[in-house]
Amino acid sequence: MIRTIAVSGFKNSGKTTLCRRLIEELARLGVRTGYIKRTSEEALGAGGTDTSKLRDAGVTAVLWGDDGLRAEETKSGISHEYIVSKYFPDCEIVIVEGGKYLDLPKIWVESDTPRPEDVKGVFMQYDRTRPGDGAARFGCGDEALMAKKLAAFVREENYRSSSVFIGSRELPMKDFIADFVRGAVLGMLSSLKQGPAQGDEVKIFIRGK
Image 1: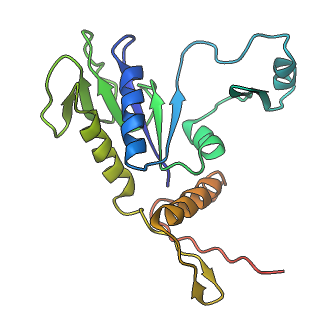
Image 2: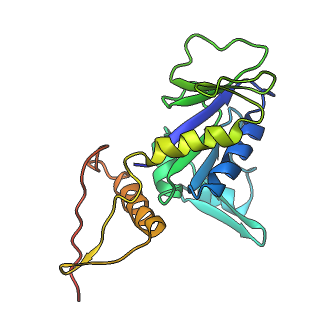
């Protein structure tokens, strides 16, 4: 199961900087990480372009340039599960910047404005102006420690938990390859209505030619 967490807080609290630092530290640990920026503003490009015309017709449109690509899709009721399964099937963890009211475990970035009482699921707090305790409260300079805790959260029981057999012979795989296979398969299956639940053992049989 791909883990998804939110880095939440108020505007100018330091969410983007923290996300960038966490992603850098997770990359050093070899954790495959995706990133979603949640905004209350309009996310789609301006009307009248080729991609917007196709998008408005119900087609997922991708603008592909030399510097990268941007995908646009008009779909009501988009959930974080849909986005993760479609765009990040091979990730171990996806970080959503924002989303204070999404039903996700959260890192709350402190600011001068107190956290609303109806924000649920906070399991870490980050305050760039104060030192942390290394357990649930963290400060500037603690990003590497936070990333290690996230990596443990992601990989505690799941890392190196896939095996591939050709006939009765197990295919030798390095840990990161086995983890990639697991993440890719579960990511694809999780988009199905009756896909696997957390903790389920999944068996796939592929017949030869």
